[in-house]
Structure formats: C-alpha cells, structure tokens
Image (cartoon, rainbow, N blue to C red; front, side, top):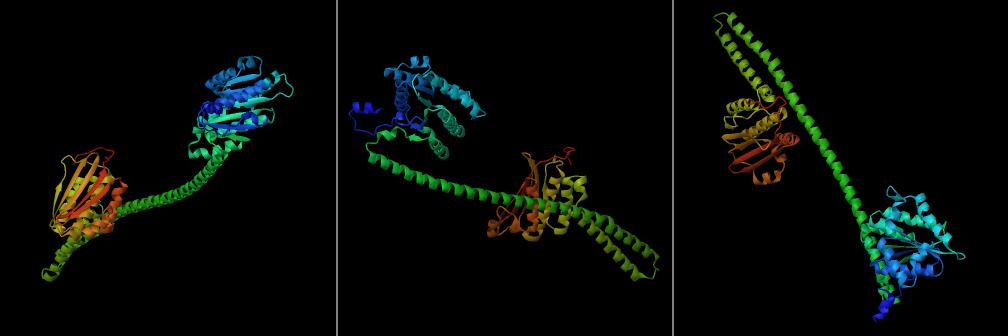
Length: 485
C-alpha cells in the first residue's frame, strides 16, 4: 500500500518509502519486497521521472509487471506506447531476454553485452536531450534466484556492474524477500547486497512509525544476525565432528573387514591343513601300521611251537596295531571326512553320529527330510563343522544323555538345530554372551565366523532343560545340481 493511500485512510504516519530516483545516475540499487504491489509504485515513479525529464528507460520484467507498469504510467499521464515508438522506452520480457545470453546455466559475458548493451546504446541514440540519462530496471536476476541458480544471479549482477562502466545508466533490480528464507541463502544474499551501491528493504520498513522504531528494528535484526552466525559456527563444528566420526567409523569398518578376511583365510587354511593331515594319517601312517601288522602275523607263524609267550605278545601287538589303525582312520576322517565331498552331507552326518555315539555313549537322533540333497561345498563343510563342534560341547559340558539333530531347507535357507537335555548355560553367562558366541569358547567363535562369512546366522538359547544351537545359512546348490542322497 502506498504512503498516499495510508494518508487517505487517516492511519498513523509511517516512514516515507525510499525514492529510487533520489540516487545518482550511476547507482545500482536493489529493492527487496514481500508484496509485488509495493514494487509497482516506485518502479512507475522511477521510469516515469526519467521519461518526464526527456530521458530514456529500459524495463526488463515479467509480462504481468510490464502491463501493470504501462497502466500506472498511463494513469499518471504518460503514454508508454508513444515512448516505445520513439525509441525512448524499451520494454522486454525477462525470461525471453535472459534466454538469449544464458550458456550452460550461466550468463555469458559477451552475449550479455551484445543483448543488453546494444539495447542501452539504441535507447541512448534515440534521445534528443543534451547529456541524456537512462533509467534501467531488471528482473532477470530474480528469475535466476527463483530457479535456485544463485551463482548465476550473483554473476549477472556483476555483469550489470561491468556494463555500467561502458554505458552510463542508473540500474535498479528487485527480489521477492520470500526467496531468502533458508540458511543456505545467507551467503549469496550477502554477495548480492555487496554488488549494489544501495539496498532498499521490503515494505515492512515503510510501516515503522518513527526513526526510533526503525533503529530498534535494525538492532533486533543485528542481534538475530549474530544469533544466526553463532548457529552457523556451531553447525560447522558439528559437521566437522560428524565428518571425523564418519571417517573413524569407516576406518573401523575397514579394520573389521580386514580382520574378517584374515579370519576367513585362517579358517580356509585350517581346513586345508586338516585335509592334508587326514590324508597323511590315512595314507602314510596307516599304511605303515598295516605293514607292521602283516609282519607281526608272519613272525607269529615262524616262531617255534614252544614259544607260547612270544606268540601271545605278538598277538597283543597285532591287536594294538589294529586299534591304532582304527583310531587313526577315525581321526583322519574327523579332520576332513572324504565322504563329505564324495557322498554328501547326509552320509557324512550319519557316519559321524554313529561314531560319536560309540565314543561318547550319548544317544543321538537325526531328523532330515528324505529329499534333502546336495548343497554347495562351503555350506556342507560349515554345517558339518557346526555339528561336530556342538556335539563335542554336549559331550564335554552338558551332561546330557541324549541329543537331537534336525536339518531342513525352507525359504531359500538351510537350517540345522542341535538340541540337548543337559544342564544348560548359567543365565548370567548366557546374558553376557547374547548376540555373540565369544563366551562359549574358541570353537563356537570359529563356527560363528564360518556361518557369518557365508551370510548366515548362529543363534543359541539355553534353559534348565537343555540348550539349542541353530545355524541358518543361505541355500546354494552345487554347479552339478541338487542330488538326492
């Protein structure tokens, strides 16, 4: 609302709005506004004053503002169409004019001079007065700002300043204040203000009733600016701390990945070493013992018939050798059962459970689907090691007379459950160990690592009625397909 309208309504006096034409002819003034209707009066006065004095004017604005200004000039007795026809007034649509010198999202300096500079020169040539002046208004910077192209808006302001060194004119531009409501706008807003010789605040400035009130308002804004500056510094500090913490977490993650890779390598090396030891025990030491037993049998037939004592000792030695061969065969198979690769998980588990019952005297039942087939070598080996380690713990620690093993495949996963009826794990130890298996010894830590490396999960729960360990792994078939055992 203009000052004259305020007076007509008998409202309290307000501060007089700044007059654009009060600035010198080399000024570059920026006007911020909240309601565009408050922009129209000073714009019409700025252009009308120039035309009334016989000078020229250039207005580059959006279509509706051009039309509204022409109507306002006409209401004040100035014919904008006549001024345009005589070349004293140029009225250009902002978006179309802007497009003529924009290259890759930025205003091109040479094209800007060609488009806008030539227009200023053309208007100046049409003026008949001595030492003619030109009033220019541009809204193109506001378009760039509204599009979020802040750098281009600042750059265009700089190009206007450079053009003013070649052509003498008074330049005014305007921005809607609502476009500066984010923290990220603070710095480009400062840059825009720095490119101008004068800054006109939005219309709220003109509503203040006195100079004292304006000074109070300025002080309040200064305090708010200090507050925002403190918040900005705090934000920067927090961003630095977050970045440092992120880097530390990344470093920790890389270390964990390195440790996991090392653990995988160690487990793979352990399996290969077990395979080698198992084969050597079976192929070398086992063969030596077999040859020794044959030699003892031959020696027994060569002894004199009256050497009964020697015959008995040789027979005892033969029995010991046979027991040693059996034990070596069991150890070699436990280190790396050859039937796991040759015949699959079902056969290897059945063989292992039979031997485990003989050695531990613990009754073990096996539940496995009849169509359970082959899975990948890594999955089969992992399940076998989990079963082996779990039953070893049952034998050593639980005191359970029985155990139950269950294998299943569902939802693309292979699952093995090992249950016992023993004394369970102490509640305090179970609570500390929840989520990890570190409290339960090196063996299960290794099993947990194996399962995790294959994308699976190892869980356990324990009560006074026993303990259940569950390993779940993603299903992966061997390249040769799924074969029922």
